[in-house]
Image (cartoon, rainbow, N blue to C red):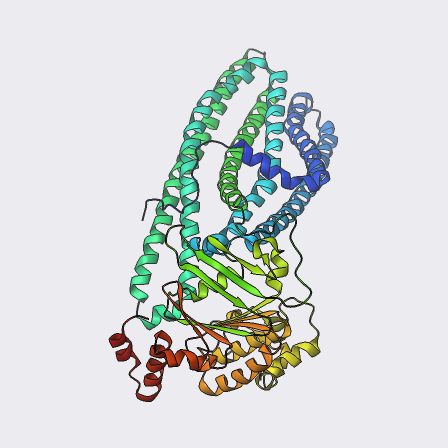
Length: 604
């Protein structure tokens, strides 16, 4: 599993300054805070330069001449500088962290908002765990860039150049001797940079795979345990985990070499100062205080260099994260409203599918020249074998996808010319596996809309959900766990029906909405559906043919085409595909031999 998969993150090799410029855009709203932070960094860098020079003065002017009285004010000055540096460092860190948190808030909001506009097919191709990593781990890496990388780099540079200037001013020859090891530092840094960039990307890529693997298998833990796949799943995770560990070890190798090399160069620089500077002291060309100050400045000289190397690590993380984030943000939604959308009519209108064909991959047509009409207030039902194209029709109706050929119109207007949000708001869909969110029962029915409590309760009562909701500990304010884990399948389905009822849609879509409900609950649902469908258009997809007996028209799909259409009795009289489906279900109910019947009847 060491090879990168086609859907892995980009691995460009250029040090992309365009990415950095895009990241800096997020700092624009906080220009004042950034400017203040820069100012504090400059002040802090200046304060850090004073310590060794005060040491030089103390030795040369006071200790060397036995003037102990002069040390007291100098010591007080030294303590005062440290106190001011503490206040400045606190203010600078606080401003930077505050700015970083605000940037993270803005970026996560932008990512989540963009994800909500993306094409549904995008989520089929990209694991949820990987997308979650974009808004969590990757944004954290960007935060590190802003809070302890980008701005503080300038502080290190100010300190570095400030130290170099002071050392040159004190003694040019000794300064040049100290700087003689800098070319070796650049050589080590170039080697480190080449290796660390590649290894760091590998670490982030494997981390994204771990997140995706965990999300997928934790969500499907019941299937894993049911089929006894614990050991094989553990082995699969071990392979991914091992890949992440190996890439980390490769990255650790570069750091394990780099930091000791920097320490070695710093030690060599100190040795050169002692050898050359000591000789200059003996001949009277350099004071002992200057030599001590040089030693202190040398230690401080390598500190920002080491910090810059650490900032390089932060920069690598941010660049890798920025590549993935901007790749996501640059993915354009395939389904959008036109620039000047047409308004929906004030009242319900006819819905028409006109010679609609559709292919998910652009080559194989899942639907072929499908045409039908749904008049206001009527119920249209679709039946057919799995893969016949029933759910695809719903996906086209909701504009999760757009038709490949033909068109879908509402009141004579192509759906692509209508406002997307307004059109979807006119629909209500109840799926076979209803999705509930964390929150209360009422919030799951309301779903963010401005619906009164009375209307929520009325909708629940209409679909017979009120009776079980009132038995819950806190009624409509009872907390729902993730995906409604504390509720039965039937209870979740009733809440989904109440949600549809409360939003009063023009077109109600039921996609096998009663297939997971027991017979007693289905009887309640059928009664609720008569209330729910009253006065509005409805499209019903069902395997249980008993649920669509009263539909105004039933369309039988087979291999993407409409093969039969009519009412229940008319289709039975034709002795065609619908009749065969009905006979299979009748045998299933009476004799429990549906599997054998399907096998003998062949595909429909």
